[in-house]
Length: 244
Image (tube, rainbow, N blue to C red; front, side, top):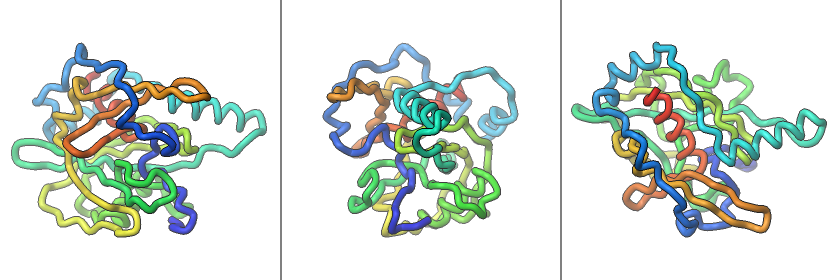
């Protein structure tokens, strides 16, 4: 991936960082929706779930709608097509729980500085699949070798307003690996309990008002980390997938 261009979709937030999402008002939480049962947040249960054919629907966010409108313009001969990309969602296996690994982008990057993301980026021509993209990017960004990753499967594409069609690739990783961050791109590597992120009580819907209109996005604050935008949207779809 070219660093000079820095067109990576690392956080794929709902918009360019022209506002502080922490200051955007909360309009609702889905506290009425059930948390994913702890029994389903186990490695064997997740392995089984990814072999099952169950009906469920990915959530269509305002960001997806904006991206779909862009695709409509492309089909009409205006603008560029969405760029294929992939992220790895690493579920870290501890003795009594799973944690989801996330990264924080460095503050100097042109796109989405300082925001929370999964390891990932745009697909390269030599990548044979979205899984290969996600694994390659994870090794480049955080030093996670593919040999330590057990791929479970993929979630539906997530479309971003910044022009990416992102495939989230869900995986299991044994705890205890020592990560090595790419200092140019990654400021921090951290983990959040999966049980926390799979509880809709922690899923905030926030509404941003601008001269161009309103945009609703998800946020999932955890301690001093503010997970929002596309990263939160993909976590939300993982929730729907497991709830089915």
